[in-house]
Image 1 (cartoon, rainbow, N blue to C red):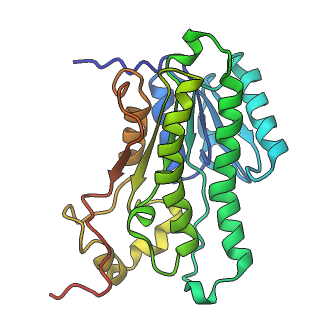
Image 2: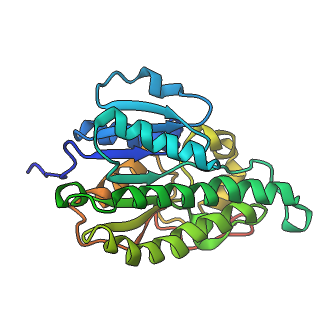
Image 3: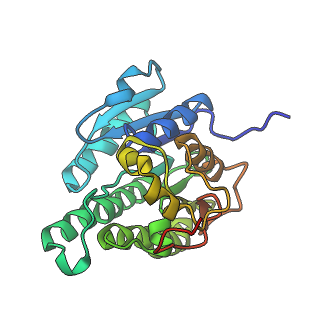
Length: 267
């Protein structure tokens, strides 16, 4: 049975599109006929290898208000229509483990500026530009945040990161679901929340067998996700036909993870 996702010709903006999850999300939307504006910060990486008339790569520093405006301007100019679906996928995860008692204010502020301030600026401009648009433009409107098990369970030595993800998953998702309908009556806001995913960002972490044994101790499927696992769920929650009555929801894509294990499991 063929499923109509309702994404053919829909304008999608994906932030952090050159990363491990972002590139798979980009490919998935393109395969379903969407017009994709793919944001990157410093490097296009695999984006430059995709040949498609429905892909526009756009550079922006998401903590700068002027860059956000230019990002949406470039996206609209590329396709002649406003962004209809926003995928907030960008983010920074400091690789060095630092207890909160030893964390610098600059690290705390930088993580929040990128992960949270950038998301605020994106959502604000996205919603502003949709005001007064036609019903046809507003029909598939939605926002999807990429959350994390860190936002659900916390993550020791990464409190800066986990606090930003909690804010996206609970504070913003559940507040904006009640605001977006004032602009787009069928507009929806959800988040897709991965656990460990095999991406370049955490490649060294996933190679550490001892650490992964602890990380997967409370995960029934006992495996890490692949980027396509996340991309599939992002597409589903963004689809106006498959998920038209889904809003304010956190979709966990974590293998059934039930919490954090502080000590290695016994053999």
